[in-house]
Length: 317
Image (cartoon, rainbow, N blue to C red):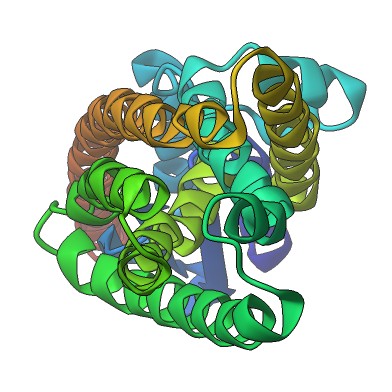
């Protein structure tokens, strides 16, 4: 009956929600048309297996297949929302790798912004009216170019599995430019290197946010973002303090040599995160393929049963 079909589809919905989504609609004769989809980790594509005229028994069998195959390692179930979900996120190595990579980058960026004015005063002897207009132009423009450009480039490269050029390579290449800015012989060269280095150092922000949310289920995306930002702010805030302490021990220029080192650590950690998410994506694709095969097999079996039943009813008449 139609009501039984809806009830069974609802049960499938609950079991399949940990994978991604189960959308079904009513068709003639109580049959449903169902689509099972699982989004890829990098957000670039989704693999969808559709079975037409899926019967009640087919939907139930497909739902049971999820329990047989199991969920990919590292995927957090929707029912783990709340504090249990928070603990699962904190213990998730893929999520924390992305978060720590971003936090290490923030250590350098927060210190860079906090100490730039003092740096140009002490090292190059510039006055406020000399360095302020330049910094007010270079940092926002470089930040916008790097942030927006990094997001656009990451979308394009994600399609071919090369997002690491934005998250990993850009962070690593930011290091020598920031070092050149700190060690430049004059302020003009310092400003030029700062612009390039800061643009590169901001390229990771958009793709990293997508990476962090991709690990969490849809009903925990805001929670994941909150944890991601909180950890970044707490650890990133240590940057200006560390430079202040180092400056008392040596001098400001020597203290700011900490910044390129943080960008190298950040790029390395992004490499770890990309590798973990790639493996998670492969696990998800494997599970999706098995579920698609199960759904196709069940649909074929259901259709064969319906034809046989119709033949038997015709013979009886």
